[in-house]
Length: 296
Image: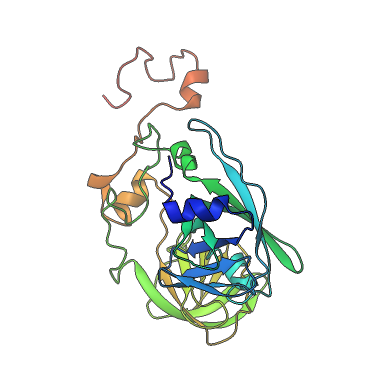
């Protein structure tokens, strides 16, 4: 149950309301932004909540128990501090949102209404609509290990333990041009074809600075490379833009051993029987199907 101060309770009981809504957005890159539906900027807790944001909120639904509550915020793409390319490049994906009820005549009288995260973001020509998910959605995420052929860890995490900051798995590059949805670039080091397939590319300069995309394919072409991203970037990709590349992993045991020499930390079960075994039938040409090991 929320604790409300006596002063706040008096303002809530007053006949004339002096309350407004404020939203505090905390992106994963550490950027903090504040927005309010009041007619002037408000400042509290070190954050300026801008009034000229065109940001409004729809009804927020809350449910008893562990059901996921939801809501939406709608805003204009021309809002100060909110740029279309940042939304398109995923900088707001998974951002934390605090929703405050604030007395604009005295910002010390405020109440934290809810804490949520941003889910799906939809953009139109002049506006955007962001889905808000309650913290209960975290209970829907898979936790623990899974019984599967492929590795359940992510490259470089605490379970994988590969140092993705090492020069063997990371490099930098510069854009030479773009053609047919692929980026033609030069890299600081020489790497085999497909080495960065499934990896990530993060721009460090240009219109897309800070944007991160997954790599669909990596091909060598002489001294240059062709990198095809999975998603389209919002900003223009120009010659001279710089980026950082991290190697890709297909989560197979063979790749873990040959590419990363990390089979000791492999978090999958590569020898588990698949659907082909379930659908097979006894045959003199097939291994004995007595429930024993296939590798004896």
